[in-house]
Amino acid sequence: MKQLLSVVAIALTVSACVSHPAQYQPLSVTLKNNEPCFAIPANAGLDAPITSHSPTIMKRAGNEWKAISPPSTFSPEVTLTTQQCHQWTGITWQAGEYDVALKVSGKNDSIRYATRFTLQEGPSGQFKLTQTE
Image (tube, rainbow, N blue to C red; front, side):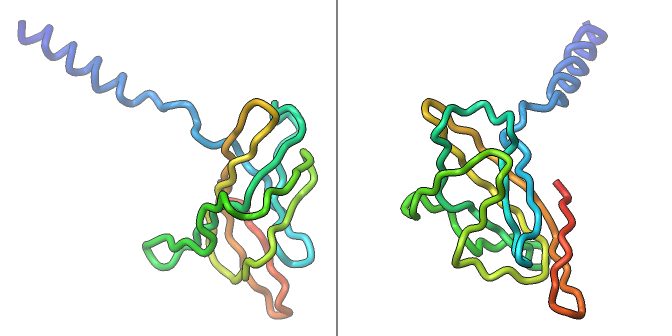
């Protein structure tokens, strides 16, 4: 009986280690005119028109994340084209680590995208972007 309980306990522990499906799909980020520019992949699987409101942008401050652009369903809706980057206005980018989440809607479905990246400012004021997730 003791062995049976041990086997059941191990099986439950191992099954808890199985990762869940990813909640977010990868969002591409590049620099355009020294500011981050975001793009969804070509194989997004969404029917046109593809639209979104502004993203949720968090910036690391020590051990915490601070919202610099909270989720916004009241912002103007923009039409996105796959593989073409889009920049949102009104965001003051500075050196640091960022986490960006974006909900993109197609004709009948929606997908959540996210990325994490670091901006490093060089001596000339130009940013260098390193995508970490």
